[in-house]
Image (cartoon, rainbow, N blue to C red; front, side, top):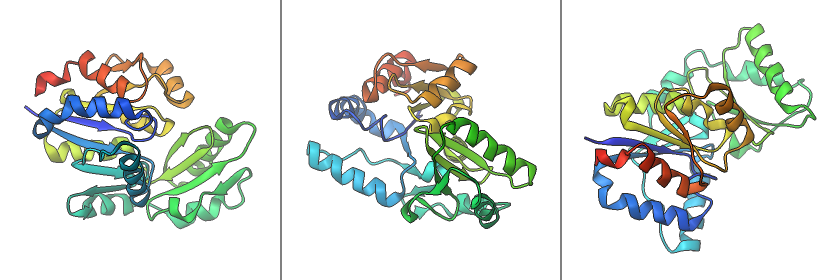
Length: 251
């Protein structure tokens, strides 16, 4: 029986090179027995840059995933490139231009560089002394004017606005269904505020000890039994979770 391993890149799989290599050494002998998905806020181009940087520093390449979820769940890439079915799903009822126009006059918001934008994502920096409150105001504004969207907030300033059926969590659910893998054979690993949607999908999950405040606050307020707060950071925490959930038994 196969299982599904989903992990964020920055400050999760990537961040401590020794931990990444140790995790790979644990997984590589069983590579054909699990499906690997990287779920990141980075663009595809940025992921390629990260991969080259990791190779230069370590002499090793990142383990090639079966699927790559980029742009906080706004795009999915497989062996054949962009997943068009996912793109079509996100396009329905997505009013990107209307949302962008509405937020032009919102105080304390500035657009992130063009490289961080795509057809299914608007990305901003929040520059307020009360960032969490500003994000909640934006959420309420979009609801009140009838512009459905999903909001991801991380690093106390990075705001991503996505189609309501987008996001990392929904993207993983879509792929898990495609792969016909069960919830209890799925482990998600994260450390960022934009990973919250991963943990809303009822799968097994590990929050690494170096997780951002947004994710730790969410964990404190939910305390779901299928989630594990690791004692270790980065890849060490993922190794810890594999043992805690006995995921290698699936291999």
